[in-house]
Image (cartoon, rainbow, N blue to C red):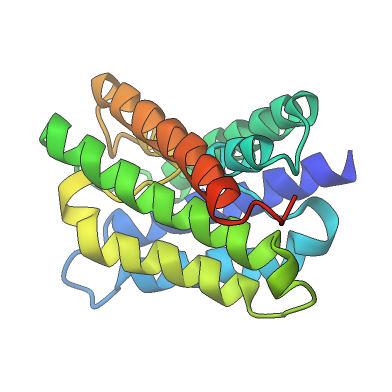
Length: 209
């Protein structure tokens, strides 16, 4: 249960930060990718020793494919992550009540490609810095993971919205940042990338079982 609570809390603060930095901050000097990468970094450091700090169903799936996580436990993690995202979205709605919500208009093909690429990068980084024998007992993993999300948000945030996480995509949909009909793009791109990253990691690191 402690692991599920940790996953809930980490995902909650990730989505809360996204909503609070994106909604109603245009022209104020707020730079959302910096805050988003930073909150993910600190939450990874905070919860890594408890749950592994996935905070992302695509990361959890990548760990299952990589062979470091059971599919049964993955279901509980995904439920906690999606629940954290929804609760965060509801809190953002309360905190930002009456503030206009910018709705992202995306090209489905470009968004799918962007989400796949940077979710792959994120899961690949997680697998290498947090599960590899070569990086065991290193303390930089939170910085690497948060930095990957920050870089992705800067690079393709204007193309896809920069979710790289099905739970974040659900939270964005609940907040009204993304249309309901676009949710499938994120789910497909993110989960496909998680699977691909797990397979690529295993192919490159056959000795790292």
